[in-house]
Length: 305
Ligand SMILES: [Zn+2]
Image (tube, rainbow, N blue to C red):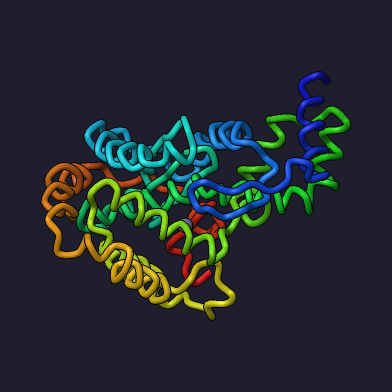
C-alpha cells in the first residue's frame, strides 16, 4: 500500500489544485500545471516503449538513429535555460504513418513516413523543434491535468484508493485511451505555440525557419480530402500556420532570410539520411490501430480530425 500513498497524496494535491499556477519559462505564459516535472518525466519514460511498439518499433539503422538524434539534441540544448536536464530521446519510428509527436518529459517520435517526405534538414529541425516546444511548454501536462481533474474522481482514483491501481494501471490508462485520456489532442493555440517555439529553437541552431512553409504544404498534401471546418479541428489549417510563420519570418526572423548563416541543408539530408532511409526494408505491417487512431499525442497530419 505504501507505494500508493504517494500517488493518492499527489492526486489529492492535483484535485485540490494546491500547486497553483506558474509562469512557463519557454512561453512566458502562466499555466496551471499541478503535475511536477518529475511526473512528466516518469510518465513519458513509462509510456515511451509501448507507444513506439504500437507504431512498428524504432528504426535500428545506427546512421539514421544518429542523424535524428544529432538534430534533436542540438535543438534541445537551447532549452536548458527553460527546462533543465530533461532526458531527451528522439525515436525514429519504423512506420509509414506520416506523424510526429511528443510525450511529456522529453520523449519525441518521428515517423519514417514523414521523414521520407521531407526534402531538407531544416524541415526536420522544424518538426523536431515543434515537438520539443510541446514538451517545454508543458502542453501535455496542461491537458492531462484538466482531464485528470475531470475524470480522476471516478474509476482511476477509485481503483488507486482500493489498492488495485498504481503505475501499471496508470500507464495502461495513459497508453490505451487513445481517444480519451492521455494521448490528447493539443488544441490549436498549443499547435501555434509549438510552431513558434520550433521556429525559435531552429533559428538558435542556425536553420532557416522558412522551412515551415514546406512542412505545412507537405502535411496538407498528406491529409488532402479529410478536411473539416477549422473550428472543429484540433489543428489550425496549414494555411493558417503558414501565415503565422510568414508573419514571424517578416518580423522577428527577418534577419534569417537570405542570410547564409541560416541554412536548409538539403544536400546533407539527402546524403546522410534519405539515402540510408531508402535502403531500409519496408516498414512492418501494423494492425491499423495506430493508423486509425487520430488522437495521438500530437498528430500533425490529422488536419481533418
Ligand atoms: Zn503539435
